[in-house]
Length: 71
Image (tube, rainbow, N blue to C red; front, side, top):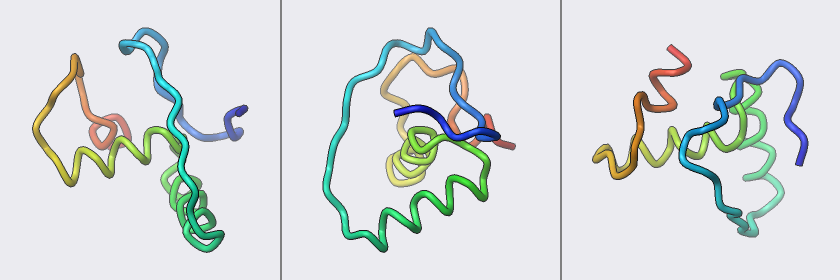
């Protein structure tokens, strides 16, 4: 999926990516996309912020969290 214009994206070389799929109700998807647009970040960065918030233990080779990247 192509990125949205104006949203900040993660730089390449962060350890690779893997596909992640799930089904959610339409209203959840709308809220998810609206929040990403408000924060001007990609959907994957928003997902990473959620994980960082719920489980703050760093488990991968990260230099900074998605939250720090948007600060």
